[in-house]
Image (cartoon, rainbow, N blue to C red):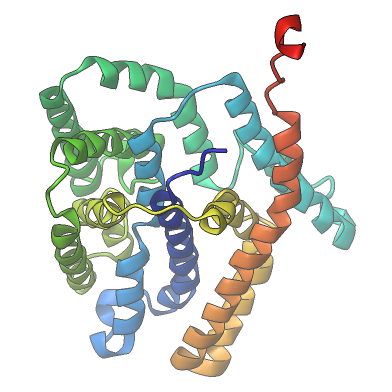
Length: 341
């Protein structure tokens, strides 16, 4: 059995850990809005963590672009059923505890229509990215290396210039399928660049660029609106994502445990951000931890909660993974009589 490239599976795990970190850190940051009105000495730790981890979503999509999404009907169905497994499953568990929400459209609609009416923007946007991937891949396969560079440059102007800087409504924050298409194309172009210059010391450039980008994001928080700074299409955050990605892309190892954990990492997002979990369980608990124990205590306890959340979600998803592996298993080819004899 072929073992997947573990450096990218590890990157997938790190990306999900970053997403958890951003959500957990946001509980604290939102207590001090507007950030520009607060003394830097009070928030430097939270701002630094936010700046380091805000690239998690971009990294996920960069990995998809680097390898390319192979569109299949089974793949789309598997994604939809994976989403519904938790949107409906966790809703039914919540109904057992609070029966009155069973017929409440506020909860029933996003549960039953987990793709089109999801409360998790990534779920819907990634579904559309998958649906559009055959057309995107066809375009990317036809254009030259120079064409890739031009396309990415145009998408930078559209998504970062018009969307982020000019605050045009189509992609003001990067929480859209437009941004996903941009990052997907960027991932494919990065692969071409890395393959074109295989002996270049990418990590030696990636590390300082990542650290400088983190510092730049922290500096931007002192002078700009907080939610504008942490937009996924902020060009500095895009650059930070690229730098972090290339650090992983050029070292290689294979580890079955890393691959085992990474194979269900998306479930961490689906579970912890479910409308019955994040707003009603995790977020109030984390807010109470900060109010009770302060900054240092919050860092310690929130880290423990984050590790436990990741581990529990990973283990909870393993039975679903086992079931899906059998439901979507390719039928074995029937050997001919000659081979059987």
